[in-house]
Image 1 (cartoon, rainbow, N blue to C red):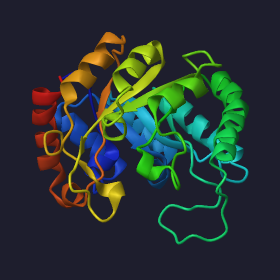
Image 2 (image 1 turned 135 degrees about the vertical axis):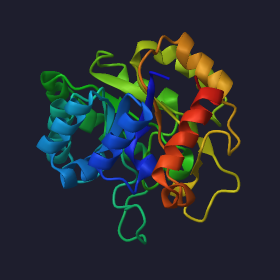
Image 3 (image 1 turned 30 degrees about the horizontal axis):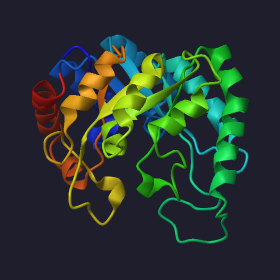
Image 4 (image 1 turned 90 degrees about the horizontal axis):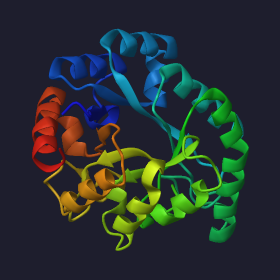
Length: 274
């Protein structure tokens, strides 16, 4: 249980201060933070809260969207924030097709998928040296293929590893997220291949049927279709010993009492993950 981390958006109703307090009260030793919530709390204040509580910051989400126009300035700010927080990694959601905006109707956009992936590689090449200077580890997160058009043109762990390999593992790693990767027949082998590049292990379940808004199709472990045991075993055998972060986007979970959510999260983690 000492590796369990609460991703802040699992209890989205909580502010940063409330989530930090909730972790302390429930004996959760780490927290995954989101940049917009940190900005609302204030970066300096968030640093003070986390340090006073003795919490580890398992991740900061998110940088990326490297397929957009001029992504480097905001990503450098994200690196700076991750450095201030002492985050184990800065999660990069790399972006979809240029011009496709999540949640908005299609306007002018590019269908050049290969070109979009090239832009991700170029953006990473520009960002990685700065991250290395600041001592921040970038973590490429492949997303389920249903998000390829608008959120991430990286859909498999293999693609993420390919993109990370030119860089030292301590500079560019990868995220293993059960929601995004459970379906991939190659995933266990790719986890073994990732090895020391695994920067974050994030867990939640994949609901069936999915809700109308597929972004909210994440469920509490045990409420969906994922067989966690092989994934847990593969990640452990790959040598990952870092925090295990529960990250759930789900309207019903968000509407529930956050303390009840954390209590359930701990029980399901103990049963299905730890």
